Length: 302
Image 1: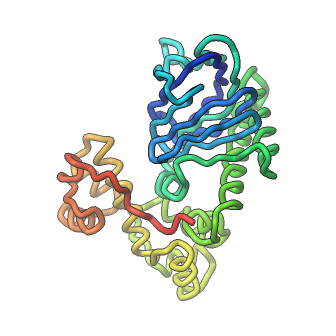
Image 2 (image 1 turned 90 degrees about the vertical axis):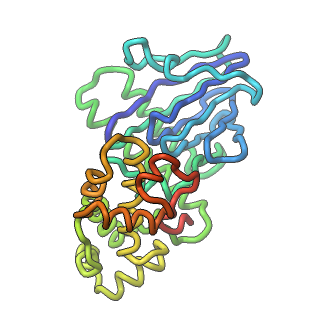
Protein backbone atom coordinates (compact mmCIF):
# COMPACT_ATOMS: atom_id res chain seq x y z
CA UNK A 1 0.00 0.00 0.00
CA UNK A 2 1.29 3.47 -0.81
CA UNK A 3 -0.36 6.61 0.60
CA UNK A 4 -3.76 6.96 2.24
CA UNK A 5 -6.18 9.90 2.47
CA UNK A 6 -9.02 9.98 5.02
CA UNK A 7 -10.35 13.56 5.03
CA UNK A 8 -14.15 13.59 5.62
CA UNK A 9 -16.50 15.81 3.59
CA UNK A 10 -19.25 18.05 4.97
CA UNK A 11 -21.57 19.61 2.37
CA UNK A 12 -24.81 21.57 2.31
CA UNK A 13 -27.19 23.41 0.00
CA UNK A 14 -26.44 23.16 -3.71
CA UNK A 15 -22.91 21.96 -4.34
CA UNK A 16 -20.73 19.86 -6.62
CA UNK A 17 -17.09 18.76 -6.47
CA UNK A 18 -14.95 17.67 -9.43
CA UNK A 19 -12.22 15.13 -8.63
CA UNK A 20 -9.34 14.90 -11.10
CA UNK A 21 -8.30 11.28 -10.66
CA UNK A 22 -5.31 11.63 -8.34
CA UNK A 23 -6.23 8.51 -6.36
CA UNK A 24 -6.08 4.87 -7.43
CA UNK A 25 -9.13 3.90 -5.39
CA UNK A 26 -11.66 5.66 -3.17
CA UNK A 27 -14.01 3.87 -0.75
CA UNK A 28 -16.58 6.07 0.99
CA UNK A 29 -19.78 5.90 3.00
CA UNK A 30 -22.62 8.40 3.30
CA UNK A 31 -23.01 9.16 7.01
CA UNK A 32 -25.85 11.66 6.63
CA UNK A 33 -27.82 13.03 3.69
CA UNK A 34 -27.14 11.91 0.14
CA UNK A 35 -25.67 12.96 -3.19
CA UNK A 36 -25.08 11.97 -6.80
CA UNK A 37 -21.91 10.19 -7.93
CA UNK A 38 -20.92 10.65 -11.59
CA UNK A 39 -17.88 8.66 -12.71
CA UNK A 40 -15.93 8.74 -15.97
CA UNK A 41 -16.53 5.46 -17.77
CA UNK A 42 -20.04 4.94 -16.36
CA UNK A 43 -23.00 6.22 -18.36
CA UNK A 44 -25.55 6.68 -15.58
CA UNK A 45 -25.17 8.78 -12.41
CA UNK A 46 -25.64 6.96 -9.11
CA UNK A 47 -27.70 8.31 -6.23
CA UNK A 48 -26.31 7.34 -2.81
CA UNK A 49 -28.11 7.87 0.48
CA UNK A 50 -27.36 7.58 4.19
CA UNK A 51 -25.75 4.23 4.98
CA UNK A 52 -24.67 3.50 1.40
CA UNK A 53 -21.04 2.87 0.52
CA UNK A 54 -19.43 3.26 -2.89
CA UNK A 55 -16.05 2.59 -4.48
CA UNK A 56 -14.53 4.70 -7.28
CA UNK A 57 -12.04 2.49 -9.11
CA UNK A 58 -8.92 3.73 -10.89
CA UNK A 59 -7.51 7.16 -11.58
CA UNK A 60 -10.61 8.43 -13.33
CA UNK A 61 -12.37 11.77 -13.06
CA UNK A 62 -15.60 11.84 -11.11
CA UNK A 63 -18.02 14.24 -9.44
CA UNK A 64 -20.03 14.34 -6.25
CA UNK A 65 -23.06 16.64 -6.40
CA UNK A 66 -26.16 17.61 -4.47
CA UNK A 67 -28.06 17.70 -7.77
CA UNK A 68 -27.12 17.01 -11.36
CA UNK A 69 -27.21 20.61 -12.61
CA UNK A 70 -24.97 22.06 -9.88
CA UNK A 71 -21.77 23.69 -11.18
CA UNK A 72 -18.72 21.80 -9.84
CA UNK A 73 -15.69 23.34 -8.18
CA UNK A 74 -12.30 21.58 -8.08
CA UNK A 75 -12.11 19.14 -5.17
CA UNK A 76 -8.36 19.37 -4.53
CA UNK A 77 -8.34 22.80 -2.78
CA UNK A 78 -11.39 21.73 -0.76
CA UNK A 79 -9.52 18.71 0.58
CA UNK A 80 -6.02 20.23 0.73
CA UNK A 81 -4.45 23.42 2.07
CA UNK A 82 -2.45 25.69 -0.28
CA UNK A 83 0.76 23.91 0.77
CA UNK A 84 -0.73 20.50 -0.05
CA UNK A 85 -1.45 19.28 3.48
CA UNK A 86 -4.73 17.39 4.02
CA UNK A 87 -7.46 19.37 5.76
CA UNK A 88 -9.06 17.89 8.87
CA UNK A 89 -12.48 18.38 7.26
CA UNK A 90 -13.38 19.27 3.66
CA UNK A 91 -16.33 21.68 3.47
CA UNK A 92 -18.37 22.81 0.47
CA UNK A 93 -21.67 24.60 -0.06
CA UNK A 94 -23.79 26.15 2.67
CA UNK A 95 -24.80 24.32 5.81
CA UNK A 96 -24.23 20.70 6.66
CA UNK A 97 -26.79 18.43 4.98
CA UNK A 98 -24.46 15.67 3.87
CA UNK A 99 -21.46 14.02 5.52
CA UNK A 100 -19.24 11.55 3.68
CA UNK A 101 -16.29 9.71 5.21
CA UNK A 102 -13.94 7.32 3.53
CA UNK A 103 -10.45 6.46 2.43
CA UNK A 104 -8.55 7.28 -0.74
CA UNK A 105 -5.66 5.06 -1.79
CA UNK A 106 -2.54 5.56 -3.90
CA UNK A 107 -0.90 2.18 -4.41
CA UNK A 108 2.79 1.41 -4.68
CA UNK A 109 3.64 -0.47 -6.78
CA UNK A 110 0.99 0.24 -9.39
CA UNK A 111 -1.47 -2.71 -9.38
CA UNK A 112 -3.59 -1.50 -12.29
CA UNK A 113 -3.34 -4.54 -14.57
CA UNK A 114 -4.28 -6.89 -11.75
CA UNK A 115 -6.99 -4.85 -10.07
CA UNK A 116 -8.37 -1.89 -11.97
CA UNK A 117 -9.06 -3.57 -15.30
CA UNK A 118 -11.29 -6.22 -13.74
CA UNK A 119 -13.48 -3.92 -11.68
CA UNK A 120 -16.21 -1.57 -12.92
CA UNK A 121 -15.60 2.20 -12.61
CA UNK A 122 -18.05 2.44 -9.71
CA UNK A 123 -19.14 -0.16 -7.16
CA UNK A 124 -22.28 0.56 -5.13
CA UNK A 125 -22.80 -1.13 -1.76
CA UNK A 126 -26.37 -0.23 -0.67
CA UNK A 127 -27.06 0.15 3.04
CA UNK A 128 -29.34 -2.89 3.01
CA UNK A 129 -26.83 -5.46 1.75
CA UNK A 130 -25.29 -7.92 4.18
CA UNK A 131 -21.70 -6.61 4.11
CA UNK A 132 -22.52 -2.88 4.26
CA UNK A 133 -22.35 -2.72 8.09
CA UNK A 134 -18.91 -4.35 8.00
CA UNK A 135 -17.64 -1.78 5.50
CA UNK A 136 -19.12 1.07 7.53
CA UNK A 137 -17.52 -0.20 10.74
CA UNK A 138 -14.08 -0.48 9.14
CA UNK A 139 -14.42 3.01 7.68
CA UNK A 140 -15.33 4.33 11.13
CA UNK A 141 -12.27 2.67 12.66
CA UNK A 142 -10.06 4.09 9.92
CA UNK A 143 -11.50 7.59 10.36
CA UNK A 144 -11.00 7.41 14.14
CA UNK A 145 -7.43 6.17 13.76
CA UNK A 146 -6.58 9.07 11.43
CA UNK A 147 -7.75 11.75 13.89
CA UNK A 148 -4.89 11.49 16.37
CA UNK A 149 -1.29 10.41 16.82
CA UNK A 150 -1.43 6.97 18.36
CA UNK A 151 1.17 4.32 19.09
CA UNK A 152 1.52 2.18 15.97
CA UNK A 153 -0.82 4.42 13.98
CA UNK A 154 0.78 3.91 10.53
CA UNK A 155 0.73 0.13 10.89
CA UNK A 156 -2.86 0.15 12.18
CA UNK A 157 -4.08 2.39 9.34
CA UNK A 158 -2.31 0.23 6.79
CA UNK A 159 -3.98 -2.91 8.18
CA UNK A 160 -7.40 -1.28 8.24
CA UNK A 161 -6.92 -0.02 4.69
CA UNK A 162 -6.13 -3.53 3.50
CA UNK A 163 -9.19 -4.86 5.35
CA UNK A 164 -11.38 -2.21 3.76
CA UNK A 165 -10.13 -3.01 0.28
CA UNK A 166 -10.67 -6.75 0.73
CA UNK A 167 -14.17 -6.20 2.13
CA UNK A 168 -15.10 -4.11 -0.91
CA UNK A 169 -13.73 -6.76 -3.26
CA UNK A 170 -15.64 -9.49 -1.42
CA UNK A 171 -18.85 -7.51 -1.75
CA UNK A 172 -18.32 -7.04 -5.47
CA UNK A 173 -17.37 -10.65 -6.18
CA UNK A 174 -20.29 -11.86 -4.06
CA UNK A 175 -22.76 -9.95 -6.23
CA UNK A 176 -21.05 -10.33 -9.62
CA UNK A 177 -22.51 -12.91 -11.96
CA UNK A 178 -20.34 -15.95 -12.61
CA UNK A 179 -17.16 -17.06 -10.92
CA UNK A 180 -14.63 -16.57 -13.72
CA UNK A 181 -12.40 -13.63 -14.44
CA UNK A 182 -9.09 -12.18 -13.38
CA UNK A 183 -10.50 -11.02 -10.07
CA UNK A 184 -11.52 -14.57 -9.20
CA UNK A 185 -8.07 -15.78 -10.25
CA UNK A 186 -6.33 -13.20 -8.07
CA UNK A 187 -8.34 -14.40 -5.06
CA UNK A 188 -7.65 -18.08 -5.81
CA UNK A 189 -4.85 -19.34 -3.48
CA UNK A 190 -2.83 -21.08 -6.21
CA UNK A 191 -3.57 -18.94 -9.26
CA UNK A 192 -3.21 -15.83 -7.12
CA UNK A 193 0.32 -16.85 -6.11
CA UNK A 194 1.32 -17.20 -9.76
CA UNK A 195 -0.31 -13.88 -10.69
CA UNK A 196 1.46 -12.05 -7.88
CA UNK A 197 4.81 -13.45 -8.99
CA UNK A 198 4.15 -12.50 -12.60
CA UNK A 199 3.10 -8.96 -11.72
CA UNK A 200 6.05 -8.51 -9.36
CA UNK A 201 8.46 -8.89 -12.31
CA UNK A 202 6.90 -8.59 -15.74
CA UNK A 203 10.37 -8.38 -17.33
CA UNK A 204 10.93 -12.04 -16.47
CA UNK A 205 10.42 -14.39 -19.46
CA UNK A 206 7.92 -16.46 -17.50
CA UNK A 207 7.21 -19.96 -18.76
CA UNK A 208 4.06 -21.93 -18.01
CA UNK A 209 6.19 -24.45 -16.13
CA UNK A 210 7.65 -21.76 -13.84
CA UNK A 211 4.25 -20.28 -13.05
CA UNK A 212 2.77 -23.73 -12.49
CA UNK A 213 5.57 -24.45 -10.03
CA UNK A 214 4.77 -21.29 -8.06
CA UNK A 215 1.10 -22.30 -8.04
CA UNK A 216 2.05 -25.83 -6.91
CA UNK A 217 0.10 -27.34 -9.78
CA UNK A 218 1.04 -29.54 -12.70
CA UNK A 219 1.78 -27.70 -15.92
CA UNK A 220 -1.31 -29.02 -17.70
CA UNK A 221 -3.66 -28.44 -14.77
CA UNK A 222 -2.34 -24.91 -14.22
CA UNK A 223 -2.58 -24.02 -17.90
CA UNK A 224 -6.18 -25.23 -18.14
CA UNK A 225 -7.27 -23.61 -14.86
CA UNK A 226 -5.61 -20.31 -15.76
CA UNK A 227 -7.13 -20.19 -19.24
CA UNK A 228 -10.65 -21.09 -18.13
CA UNK A 229 -10.57 -18.64 -15.20
CA UNK A 230 -8.73 -15.65 -16.65
CA UNK A 231 -9.87 -16.10 -20.24
CA UNK A 232 -6.36 -16.13 -21.72
CA UNK A 233 -3.45 -18.59 -21.74
CA UNK A 234 -0.66 -17.56 -19.32
CA UNK A 235 1.76 -16.46 -22.06
CA UNK A 236 -0.90 -14.31 -23.75
CA UNK A 237 -1.81 -12.80 -20.40
CA UNK A 238 1.82 -11.84 -19.77
CA UNK A 239 1.88 -10.14 -23.17
CA UNK A 240 -1.26 -8.15 -22.33
CA UNK A 241 0.12 -7.08 -18.95
CA UNK A 242 3.35 -5.90 -20.53
CA UNK A 243 1.53 -3.97 -23.23
CA UNK A 244 -0.90 -2.46 -20.73
CA UNK A 245 2.02 -1.28 -18.58
CA UNK A 246 3.80 0.10 -21.64
CA UNK A 247 0.67 1.94 -22.78
CA UNK A 248 0.38 3.64 -19.39
CA UNK A 249 4.03 4.71 -19.64
CA UNK A 250 3.52 6.04 -23.16
CA UNK A 251 0.55 8.11 -22.00
CA UNK A 252 1.91 9.24 -18.66
CA UNK A 253 5.68 9.69 -19.08
CA UNK A 254 8.17 11.16 -21.55
CA UNK A 255 10.39 8.06 -21.49
CA UNK A 256 11.69 6.96 -24.86
CA UNK A 257 10.19 3.93 -26.54
CA UNK A 258 13.47 2.08 -26.01
CA UNK A 259 13.40 2.73 -22.26
CA UNK A 260 9.76 1.62 -22.02
CA UNK A 261 10.54 -1.50 -24.07
CA UNK A 262 13.29 -2.48 -21.63
CA UNK A 263 11.05 -1.77 -18.63
CA UNK A 264 8.54 -4.38 -19.80
CA UNK A 265 11.05 -7.08 -20.68
CA UNK A 266 12.00 -6.48 -24.33
CA UNK A 267 15.63 -6.51 -25.42
CA UNK A 268 15.04 -4.52 -28.58
CA UNK A 269 12.77 -1.65 -29.48
CA UNK A 270 11.76 -3.35 -32.72
CA UNK A 271 10.53 -6.53 -30.99
CA UNK A 272 8.56 -4.42 -28.53
CA UNK A 273 7.01 -2.33 -31.32
CA UNK A 274 5.84 -5.44 -33.17
CA UNK A 275 4.24 -6.85 -30.00
CA UNK A 276 2.65 -3.52 -29.10
CA UNK A 277 1.12 -3.07 -32.55
CA UNK A 278 -0.24 -6.62 -32.42
CA UNK A 279 -2.20 -5.74 -29.28
CA UNK A 280 -3.17 -2.11 -29.89
CA UNK A 281 -3.16 -1.87 -33.68
CA UNK A 282 -0.82 1.14 -33.49
CA UNK A 283 2.92 1.58 -33.15
CA UNK A 284 4.11 2.91 -29.76
CA UNK A 285 4.82 6.33 -31.31
CA UNK A 286 1.38 6.47 -32.94
CA UNK A 287 -0.27 5.42 -29.69
CA UNK A 288 1.55 8.15 -27.76
CA UNK A 289 0.25 10.79 -30.16
CA UNK A 290 -3.29 9.42 -30.51
CA UNK A 291 -4.15 6.90 -27.77
CA UNK A 292 -7.39 5.01 -28.52
CA UNK A 293 -10.37 5.29 -26.21
CA UNK A 294 -10.73 1.54 -25.77
CA UNK A 295 -8.60 -0.44 -23.34
CA UNK A 296 -7.23 -3.90 -23.94
CA UNK A 297 -8.91 -6.65 -21.99
CA UNK A 298 -6.60 -8.59 -19.69
CA UNK A 299 -9.16 -11.32 -19.14
CA UNK A 300 -12.79 -11.89 -18.26
CA UNK A 301 -14.19 -9.33 -15.83
CA UNK A 302 -16.98 -11.49 -14.47
